[in-house]
Image (cartoon, rainbow, N blue to C red; front, side):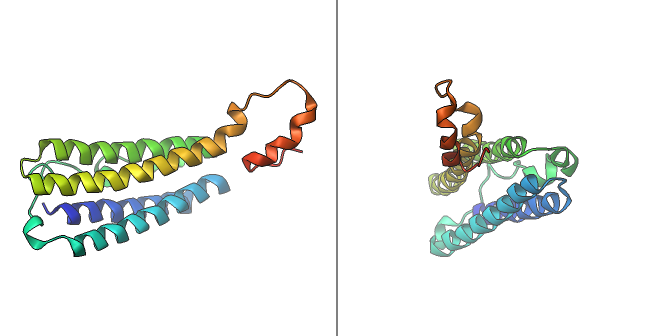
Length: 169
């Protein structure tokens, strides 16, 4: 299977999955997170299209390691599990697990790939997916900061919570 065609199909499936879940989500925060993920999948799809256009056609060989790889959005995930998410932090955990699985898929495929040129393409795609995962982790850390923040036990520092993007009183 062509590496970029596979990657673009994953992104299209992800965009569709996240849009469907966002449309059915019960809370505004969860809806926003899944909508954001749909947009991120679209951005990655555009990046992979651009990468495909710049790669030499001799490198565009089929990957034997992707022949058995499945599409996580079609084969593994179901909307029911995602629709049971009730808060933002759960939604972030969910999408980080999904993105980590996608990263592992490309990294494992690269390790199994016998063709060095195709192996390099798989690593480039894995790097893009890894950037996406790191971006999600930073967002999660920002959103979760008030839960992890340990301050001196005085009330004089309550005005610091606006630093975390939340107004607490």
